[in-house]
Amino acid sequence: MKHNNIRFKTLHDLKQYRIGVLKGAVHGKEFDEADYLNKNDVLNRELNIRKLQAGRIDLMAGPKDVVFHELQRDYPELVDEIRVLSPPIGKNDVYICVSKKRKGYKQLIESFNSKLSEVKADGTYERIMRKHGLVNVQNDS
Image 1 (tube, helix red, strand yellow):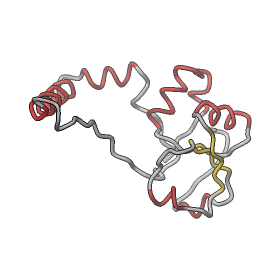
Image 2: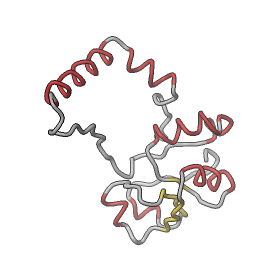
Image 3: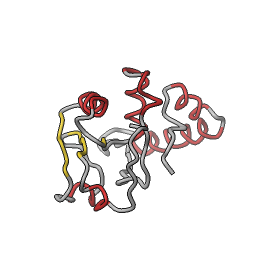
Image 4: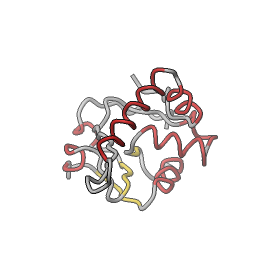
């Protein structure tokens, strides 16, 4: 929450805090293996949001774009109350997979990549991301 004054440089600086995590989610190797952190597993992100709001956890780990999308959709009154800390605790790439058994899979991948480049170049991608609250999420610097 914005009212707390949590700052950190390394994960060890977070030892004193209760951190909500989504059970089974991957947050980056270093964070996931940090058994010295006080992590509280939940089954869905909504529980973490509610626990954060109620002060039952101090921090919530998760992909900021996804978290802010869920906040915009389900808890718009909290969007301005949530602060993103930096540096990120981890980074995970996202991939789209296509089976090699699918006829024309190489062309499908090339076509997808080409169209994605087009929508990024013409601004459509950014408009879609803005529409769903997935860009310009404020970081704590």
